[in-house]
Length: 212
Image (tube, rainbow, N blue to C red):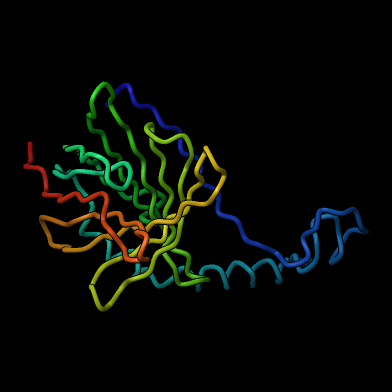
């Protein structure tokens, strides 16, 4: 995948109440909003609070088992009632940002096209949710969402949101990681049918690629 160059910029942002961008006097009510640190001690306290939130890495360590190289077999159905297309992706899965972001790079062939996909998974300790971002050369808009562990199914379930470029309406799907073992796991993507039941339209079974 030498031809695939992705420059990834990730910014860690902290939402500050009252940050409305208006011009006011400097200090607590300065041009960048209220509640910003106005002294070294406040700045250090803010940093300590953020570090405390970040200290528990157990949610991310549950995903350590995914790191490595994978081969997948599966199929997807572009629209309800449409034909199923077999796909055989390969995946490189690596930790980034000091093991705070899991990066998954997929490449696979469909008739007449090579599809490249990038998935980023991280953890938001303030909301106790996983965050997911998805980019694909086969879909014009990025998708994003949040995820939680489903203890009933022992799966990590993401609610993915993107936009239908034809209608502008939001498309919401369920992306599920399950059957998680040392050398295998399953990804499925589901949408609601007319009866409101979840129906899988993408299923991929991953096995760990042999060592070179």
